[in-house]
Length: 517
Image (tube, rainbow, N blue to C red):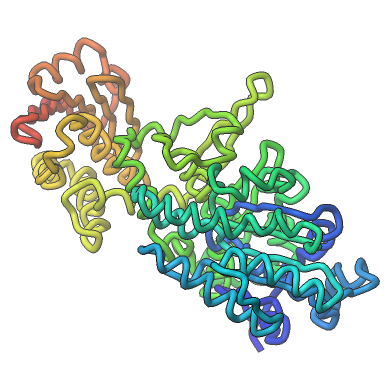
């Protein structure tokens, strides 16, 4: 039989029974379970959080036979059976107050079928509290509580303050049972993409240990470089054969596309497991993680706060900013970081500041591809083709065609963007040229009030200057005065100096002037 890759497989028992590859995380799971009591872990989506909780559930239920040959088999001696309450909030679309209540109600009813109910307990929070007590009393064992994607309702309600408040109120009461029933709880782990600071999980449970940025557990989800070679060495060779690359080139491509997640300043880079496993299964490189879900809430945050997209590439911030999300904040960076679209690239020990950046090519390219139709007048289906046309026109020296296409991108800019139109122009330009940069050499520099850009291909060099409510002549004059084209004075390629002016009145490009050498 060919190797089975657990793509999207989140149930540990099924994974083991069906013979899927399992990257052994059980030594860390054993340490987690036997070191502390309450934990929180934030990781990007599709990073193995659900499988982690399922593995913990099997361990807590004493299913020793599932761990044969794994590290935990030798570490655990007692195999005590605990009652487990496992709540998964990932399966519902949260668009009304009832949608969250219904999910909680369904889970509580299922648990009550096992441990009984009390008519004196009104509301899901009180019933959850009673369930923890009864499960402990009836089994003689303290309860293990596992909550998957605790923040899913909060994330889906970003931008809807009323709904956020409803969800916060419901979750505050529900999770409050963890503190009130402390004596009946053996272990609790809550996972999610983000950490909302104003949900009571974090404001009330002051004994909750956050291991999201803990060196001891950086490898508990995801796949490290060492694990790639320990578990998938044959697969790398098979992928190399299928793609026509050498072994070394294949390793480099895997690393460039899927590695690069750093969860502390000293941590090894972690591969995105979903994309890595898909690549080995299909023997083809692709944007697998990004294609499984569009970060709509991230785009809404960026647009809501008129965030300059180029600033995403130059972020220096502190741990408190990364560590918690305040839903009233105007800073989208903590959400973008915790969602996995940015990661730690460097650390300044003196100032205790983190430098952030895109973890790898899949995320960077996928993020900008997703942004383009959300900012410019181009459909999702036509967006990749538009970028292809831009690149082909630049490589062929078709300046007029290039700018005609660019004008279509600026058509129909909404009037509500008027007060931040300059930021919107810059964002569209930055996204377009960033995507082109995956195919041609782009140097892009901006400052308040101006943009200068250099595109280089095998045959052409384009030096561009953009103005807002000025003139194309002014833009060309600036190229000359600042010497932007000077580095290419002795270049054998055709050099174009291009001045571009945007008009607020037209809400588009008004004038383009070109000088060729």
